[in-house]
Amino acid sequence: MGEANWFDDDIERIVVTEQQIHDKIEELAKQVAADYAGVDSLLLVGVLKGAVMFMADFSRALGRLARPAELEFMAVSSYGQRATSSGVVRILKDLDRDIAGRHVIVVEDIVDSGLTLSWLLRYLDSRSAASVEVVALLRKPDAIKVDVPVKYVGFDIPNEFVVGYGLDFGERYREMPYIGVLRPSVYSRT
Ligand code: IMP
Image 1 (cartoon, rainbow, N blue to C red):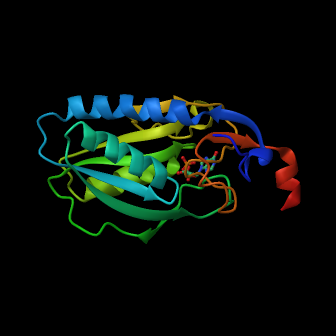
Image 2 (image 1 turned 180 degrees about the vertical axis):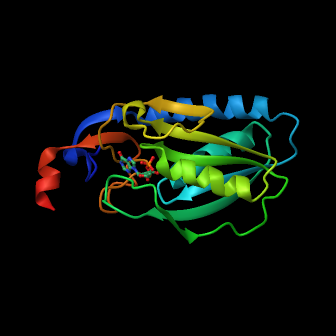
């Protein structure tokens, strides 16, 4: 704490604080650890780049609860407009290993329209995982276009564009430790 950060002035309103993120991750990890108590090793699939912070903190929280996990990453890109998702997904980076027979948890930053996730779940199913569930730090219930089963949700937030903790606007703000809404002046600057 103390010194102001370069990004603080660009933020109109904080939506989820650093402390709230921390506490929620502990809570989610406890739920997952309890639900998968009988599973030898979980396979966490993080979706780059947005989920990178969440993946790092969530996997460490699981580790402290003595639940071993392997970490995999995928990168996907949806065609269409910048801040909205068209549901047409292109794989930029595929899984490095076979997930057949594995218990998979997709680690997502945010479920907005749900289109990316819905595509991803179909894709993982087609690779014969033993089970596939989703943990998402954020969800915008008012933006959902397709019904996707998200078993573990951190926070339901209003339908507005947020940045921080992995989420970007034009590749900026990912390193912010909290989640917030940008001032309108930031958009007119670009
Ligand atoms: P969806 O397919 O609409 O559910 O969202 C796909 C992706 O868009 C998410 O995984 C995020 O990376 C990105 N996204 C959605 N909403 C936001 C936001 O409010 N801020 C930053 N990125 C977002």
